[in-house]
Image (cartoon, rainbow over the protein chains, first blue to last red):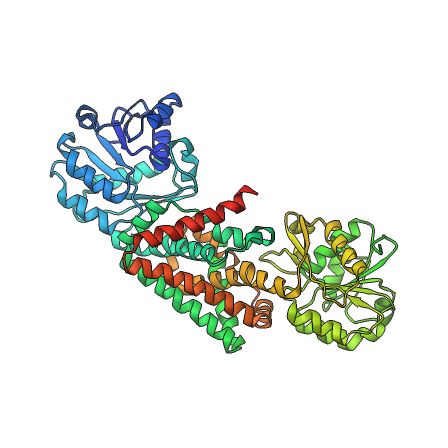
Length: 285
Length: 285
C-alpha cells in the first residue's frame, strides 16, 4: 500500500475538484504540492492551508519528487500535459485523474506513457454549480460515488490504491467499472440529464417564469447551470454513447407524446406506472 | 370580505390537498365539514382534529349550510358532482377548487352553474409524491404559488376572497392569471417536466443504476413518481397546450443532439450559456 502520509502528492489543476482533493488529503496528513495556471489560486490555497506549495509552471523538481500525481484537468489539456512533462516523473510514480469520460482518455494516456510509471483512472462523481479552488469542499464527496476504471494494463495494487484513495477522501460508494461501462452509465445518468436540463431552459424565455416555478422545475433545471467549456468537451469525447442515450430518450419521450396525441390513456398510465416503480427503488435505499 | 371564522367551510374530496386545506383553515378557527368517499379518511381526519364533521355521502343539509365550498376532486368527478348536487347549494355560496388544469374546467363549471352561486377557480401549486389525508400538511403551501384564474363571469369580490384564502393558508406567492395563461404556464413548468421525468425513467432498466446515480439524476427524476390516474387526466385535459410544449422541447433537444452529431461545439456552448444565464435568474431570487 503506497498511501502512507510520508508520500508526496502532486495535484495538477487546482480547481473545484483538485482543491477538494487537496483539502481532503492534507487533512489526512499528506504533503500536497500543486501546479496550476493562476498565481492567485496558489496564493489562496496556501493562505487557507489547502496545499503546502504551489507553482504556475511545471517545475521538474516538484514533478520529480511526487509519488502520487492527481490530474484534475480538462481531457485534452491532460493529454498534452502528459506528452510534454512525463519526462520529469519519478520512476514508479502512480498517476490518477478525475476526468468525467474514460474510454477516450484512459487508453490514449496509457499508450503514450513511460513504462516505469502507472496511470490508474478514476472518476469522482461529485461537483457543484460553482467553480474554482475558492469553492472547493471535500464534503461534496460524502454520499457520492467514486469509480475506478482500470484496463488490462493496470496492476492489482494500483487498483487497490486508487480505491483506497476514494475511501480515504470520504466517498460513500467506491467501485470498479470498465471504461466503456463507465461511459455508458455516465452518458445516461449525468450527460443525458444535463442535455435535458439545457434543452428545457432553452425552450422558454418567459421573463416572469420564475414567479410560477415550482420545485419540480427548479430540481429539473438546477444542472442547466453548466460550465460550457468543460461539458462541451466531455460531451464530444463521449459522442457515440451519448447520441445513443439521447436517441433512447427521444424514443420514449416521443412515445409519451403519441399517447397524448392519440388520447391513449392506458399506455400513458402504463408508462407512468413504470416510472413510478423504477423511481421508488432509489428512495428505498 | 366573506372570510371570517363564523363562516362554514365544506371541503369536497379529503385527499392530500383537501386535507392540507382543512388543516390550515381549521387552525385559523373556521368550522370545517368534509364530504369524501372513504369512512376511514373521515375517521382519521376527526381523530386528528383536521375536520369538525365528515360524511361519505353528499348530505343535503351539510352542503346547504356551507358558505364556502372547496372542491379537491379530479376534474371529471368535479363536473359530475356539480351537475348532480348543485341543487343543494346555499344561495350566495362561493365555490372554489384546486384543479391543476383550468380552461377545460372553469368555463364548463361556470356555464352549468346556478346563477345564485359563484365559482372562482384557483390552483394551489403544491404537492407531494405521497397521497391521502394521512399525508396532508399545510407546510407544503409555504414557499409555493397559489394562482387564481377568474373569467369575466367572476365578481371582483370573489377574486379578492379567493386571493385572501391563498394568503391565509400561507402561500408565498398569490397571483391572478387567465385560465389560458395558467394552462400554458403549467404545461411548461409542471406537465412538461413530469413528461420528461417519466420518459427518462422509462428509458433504462439497468438494475444497478441506483448504485451510480448522482444528485442530478435523482433531482431530475423525483417527479417520475406520479399518480397515473390523476396526471393522465390532467395531461389529456390540457392536450393541445402540452403537445405544443412537448414539441418546443423536442425541437431544442434535437438541436442539441445535432450539435453533438456534427461536432458543432460553438452552437453547443451557446446553448449551454443560454441555459446557464436563464437558470441563474432563479437562484438570485
